[in-house]
Length: 121
Image (cartoon, rainbow, N blue to C red; front, side):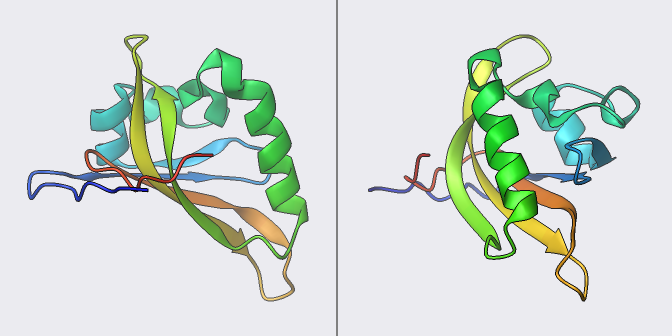
């Protein structure tokens, strides 16, 4: 496993989704990285940025993470779908969000515009 650190010019795309996989927060960095405005993204499924061939696996993994209180976070490199149809790989940290009673309230995804972790799913 090898990693490449992000450059000083890198930025972060931050997305928050609810337990039903719907986007409820879309940062300026997300608009810049993915090419969708906040208005276009809010209320949409996370599948907006998931390549079609990975959507079924994403739905299964997201549902499992929301139902499994043992899942806390993961860091890896994943392919993402951009608004212009390109697919690019980006480093991501995914954090499950849970309330004081361990009930899933969604997930937070932090993408780095460049750099890789060397970890793939």
